[in-house]
Image (spheres, rainbow, N blue to C red):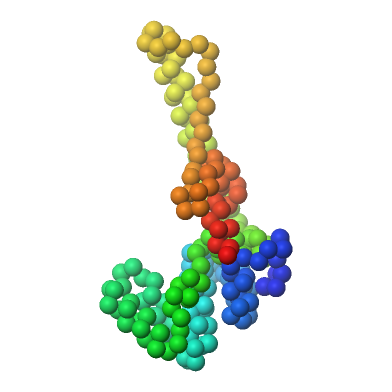
Length: 208
């Protein structure tokens, strides 16, 4: 699907930035690497880094700089790596300021993996590769088995306590539900719905 199209008529942050910075071909590259097989495939987090470096390259070029690949990679590391010293980060920011790059703006434009996921799934209509889907299903089945075991153990213990008159309890059913609350976007799902949905609403919250 082209970057000018959308499956739901809404333009998210990634699509907007691609258009604003004329990042032709970047959307195709993101989708291709996300759906590739084997070592060619990149995770959503890796793709967020790829996209953010393209944003940085565009900002540097728009300011009249002529960045090489290694320079973009190094500047991005200096701006985002938590292990970089404050002094090195400040020097990098000042250098970019002198060259006319709005550092605050580029930081605001950097995207998370949730925004990349939203763009690929909702804007481009891309799907997870089969291996990832299998991992999700496998994880869901494992959680279901664990939940079933918790229910069985609970039923057994409650029945034993009732028989020995340790507790009073009539006919009962044990309900075991696992809920997940994302503290970033504030959404809550039962774990199976979360897995079926492919995540929380963090990607939607990236929209301006």
